[in-house]
Structures are given as C-alpha cells and as structure tokens.
Image 1: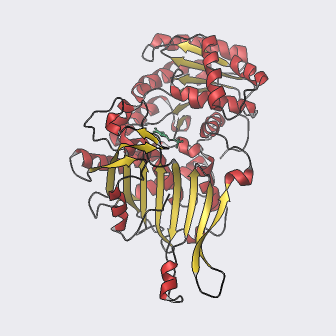
Image 2: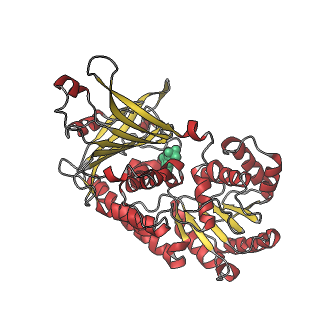
Image 3: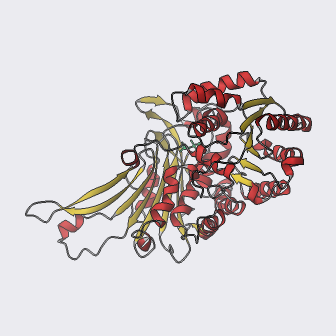
Length: 500
Ligand code: BG6
C-alpha cells in the first residue's frame, strides 16, 4: 500500500462528468487532495459527458459541489482558484469516435499548457451500458502516440457495477483486456477506500494477540451487517435490476468478508493481498442445507427518524408488483482449514432503522462448570465488534465480576473510538482511491479474478430465485431491522443477530 507520496504529473479524464458521482464524490475528493498537497503540481482534469457545458459553467457547478460535499471546508479561495484552473470540460457522445479525436487533441493541448506530460488516468463514472464503447475508444484513440509510449502510463478506473452476473463480468473483463493490461485496470469498490476497512488489515496483522484466535477453534460465528436507513432515492430503474444482492452484497459485503477471513499475505503488495482475498472468495459456499440459505425482504412503508416514508413499490421507477429484494440475509461457509464449520452470517438492507456497517466476531462460550448455574446463565459470549461506520471504532465485549459480596457477572465493553483517539477527520474513500490509482497502487482495487469469483458465488443464488425457487420475499417495515424471518433464520441455528 502507498504511503503519502505525491503522484507523477498526470491528467484525469472523467467520463460521466455531469453525473452525481462526479459532483458528490470525485471532484470534492480531488479538491481535498489538493488542499492536503497530495496532487501533483502539474495536474489537470477534463470532464467528458453528453450535456453541454463550458469550462466556466463546469467550474462554477463544481464549486457549489465542493462547498457542499468536500471534506475540507470552508473553501480556501487561493486553493480553489488554482484547482478551478485545472478543471476542463468537453461535451461529447460516448459512441462517437470523432468526439474522442477531439478529446485527444484537447488532452494534448492541456498537457502542453500544464506541462503534465502524457500520463493519463481515465475514470468511467457513466452508466455501465456505455462502458464497452468508452473502453474501446479510450484504448484505441486516447492511449496511442505519446500516451501509449513506455515513457508514460495510462490507467483506467472502472466504477461498479462490474457486470451483472458471472457471464457478463467475464465478457467485460475480456473486453477490457483487449485494450488494457490487468495492471492498468482499477476496478472500484469504494468500501476498500474507507479507513476502517483498511484498518482490518492493521488490526489483524499488526497485532500479536488477535490472529492466533482468529479461527474455527475459537470463533463461533461471524456476522457482517451493512445497514442503510436511506431508500433507493431516484435510482428506481437501476435498483429494480440490481436489488441488494448486486448493489451491496456481491461487492462491498463480500469484500468485508474476504478481508475478515483472509490469510496474512506474505507482503503488502497488490498481488499478494488480492491472491489471499481470491482464495477466500473461491472457498466460499452459500449454505443450502436448509432452504436456499437466504432470507429476502422488501421494505414497506414506515418511519425513519420520525418521518413517514413510502414502501419500495411506491418509489419512482419501481413496478407496483416488484419482487426486487431490498434486504438480504445469507449464511455462508468458508471451506478452508481456518474456517471450516464456522458460519458467516451476512445481511444488508435499505430503509433499516439506522445506517450502520459492522463486523462481529463472536467467540465460543467458555466451559461454564466453574460458575453456578444462575451465574452461568448471565454469561454471554465474547464479541469483537469492528464498527466500520458511522461510529468508527472497535469494541470488545466480555464478562466482569460485579463489585460486592455476590458472584454476579455483568457484560462490559472495552471501546476504541477513531474520532476521540485521532481527533482528525479521515479522508473520504474516494480521495484514497484516486490517489492510489495515480500512484499506480492497485492493492485497494478488485482484480479480474476477484470480481469473477464473487460473481461465481452470487450468480447461482440469483438463478435459483429467478427459477422460482428459494426464499420468499418478506415485507418489512421501513425503520425496522428487516424481516422477522431473518431472526428465525439464526434462531434455527440457536443463534441471534448482534443487536445494532
Ligand atoms: C453504493 C450503492 O455502492 O454504496 C448504494 O450503490 C449505497 O446503494 C452505497 O447506498 C453505500 O455506500 P456508503 O459509503 O454510504 O456506505
């Protein structure tokens, strides 16, 4: 993984520059990087999209976006002026080769003016339908000449979703590889850019006391939750085709699982880390010993923060009889020597009571013969909770003797909290990821075999559902913790979800 190095001079080309992601995440991340002195002096960015805009109108819109979304606030006027000068815009049609020729000329002109050389980073922030045509044009028009020479680098960042099943992910990988070598490709899963997610490495492998008990001898089960209180907003037509399984589980959630379960890599290099994650993904199995190993749900109307919210089927762009799942719980096993027999329960849902992402390691109960029966009943299993967001931290739950003459035991919690310990706002995930791509470090990006391994696990689940088999869609109230059936799912194993 990279340290705080500064990248070489380069130019960033964002396709989809008039979209939400560019405004809310990408440009604010770039601005914050400039504030932290992490962008190269000779940096430039050009946005490409269908909408007509001038450089000036684009810069103005981006200023408003940074005022609202950048981590570094308020806007620093001097830095903004410098940053704004590096922003450019070009209207174009993703399918028109001539527009890429024009873009190429502009890149060369900007590169000359900024002295940024022909190092080029391309960012696909468009709807996935146009990825193939952009990839082809970038590869055949924009990565030639000086940009294609050995003296310069070209890299491409591809947003999620990367495919919609195993077949389409394989096709997209094959298409990408026609124009780019794998080491030029940066597939984004923004969860990997989160500080707390990177801390899973550090927590596990830079401490002596956790790794020895991180296995089936000591761990009873692992629970991973990605809960969101937001609904689907105006993304109805996308979400109808995705559901939570494609939107969160196939990528973010499986990444959290892979980091939790992986073996220590021999070194912190992109390949060593990703080799270990791929091994986990390949060893993963959905437990179908009871039903299809899933519980699916869809949110109905309810209240979030005291406000009435509509049910999923009343959302814009959603079919009134939609059977798309907005909640999913699954039971998985990692069939390897470390984890055989330890269930990994994962769940994710929209419109749940709170926004919360956490990984819970539940340890086996100690033999309780030492304690009287009544006391033993009060003993709860030890839990290690990694709070990914929003209350970033780690806590350990254990039993302690209540002071006094009795032998009462109470569960207590030892807490580490990022905010109060480090007293500094963590960089946004996109800041870290864009910087790493500029530096040529792909440790925090998903490799082609990794994305295919996760689809290989998920695709049969979707196919079972589509064939009419598997779990039913259970309705749950917005503002709850998902369908009751998800509780029954764990209760059948004699377990319960960690209370959020
Ligand atoms: C995106 C999903 O990848 O992640 C969204 O498409 C989801 O539906 C978002 O809301 C969650 O990201 P975060 O960083 O807010 O947890």
